[in-house]
Picture (tube, rainbow, N blue to C red):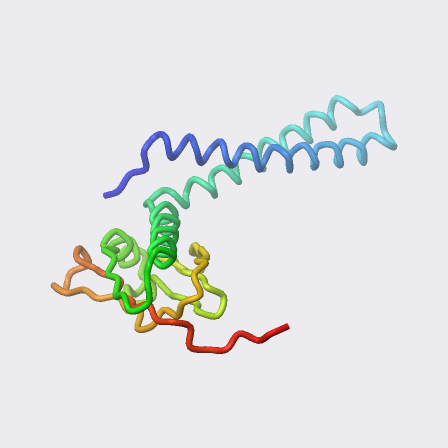
Amino acid sequence: MDFINVADLINCILVLKSRVGVIVRYVYITLYSFVFMNKRAEGILYDNIIYAFLFILFFMLMFYFITGYQDGATFWEDFYAKEISLMINRAEPGMEIAVDVSNLAVIAIKNGKSYREIISIDNVNNRVSVSVRNGAGTSYGFFKDFDIVEPRVEIPSGGATTTRFIFKIKERQREIPQV
């Protein structure tokens, strides 16, 4: 079983706190000005209601964000999307690249997703998409103007513990429209 380490959890909380903090302040100011424009006598009650609402909202968002890291799915999706795009950016035409994606395959099978659907390459938009959960995933772009051909996920020994993603790098085969 994969566990996230404390540094990843703290980093995830800090990112969430910085993003949620701006939203919480905006919602608080909006609600505060709307509520208190007409009724100033009930200020203490409205302050407490707004505070309770924001408190519940914050912890709901925090729960949603952390559950994505529960089985390591979000971490591994992000990791492999960036690593594969980095490999494509460093590759030369004619190369065949094989990446061990055993961690992704194990999580995908636990989540009921086929191992053949975990990684996809979009040559038109130059993006690598990795998804081990139904309805969610991570996409990352690459910069080299290559075509990625014959992408496939193989399980040589029949078990998810030796899964490889294999693809070939070719020169761009299509014309780019001139503007």
